[in-house]
Image 1 (tube, one colour):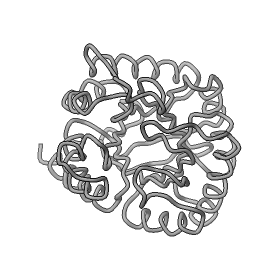
Image 2 (spheres, rainbow, N blue to C red):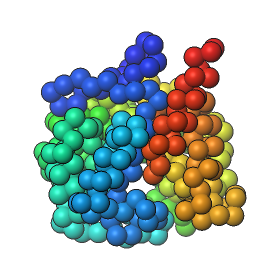
Image 3 (cartoon, one colour):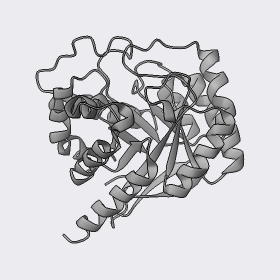
Length: 285
């Protein structure tokens, strides 16, 4: 499979001028340079971000995902200049302090991606899968970095206004297959696919999608899942995001057993332990 070693223990990606081996399964730590992310503990300014980055790397994060604009349901986009003001100092300072760390910029704007890649980021995480900014795929291809393409129905502002599917797993799989082909046709060799849990999906849609995650994992690309502290956990258990660590770990284990390669999480230590235990189970097959 492209991008994965034969031993299924490493993901190998081109990051600018080097080949980088990433543990498989991998953990991506969420680092939000925003004042309004849904999980307050993940919000960070520069000094906080450096401390969070150090802790996440020590706890086993293979990737740090830095975002400057909340994409929670109902959120409004911030101006591009404000997004850049939030993320560029964080990317630059973390890269200076931890030059070997793989930093991902979480944006759908090609200019934000381009400037953050110049400041030290080595990956782009795009909730728009190249459809919200026509320059995104070209920008990523020129930078020669891995690219995450996510499924979303609608936009963050509208996505939870009565989302509807005939067959959510089939439709998301078809969409991601198309975006995978579009990204590779644009010259991006290392593409990661994200089903977009919670992005234009009801709780029932999310569980149907997780139940059939193998259909997406059958595509020729690693699959990232972002389940951390989301409504699909909180609504079923009757809890708040602050109480959702145990539920997150349970669903992360399900996702890994169904073939996911990367966990995007707020809580790196617990996710890394989950990944190690699932890997131990797989080793017995």
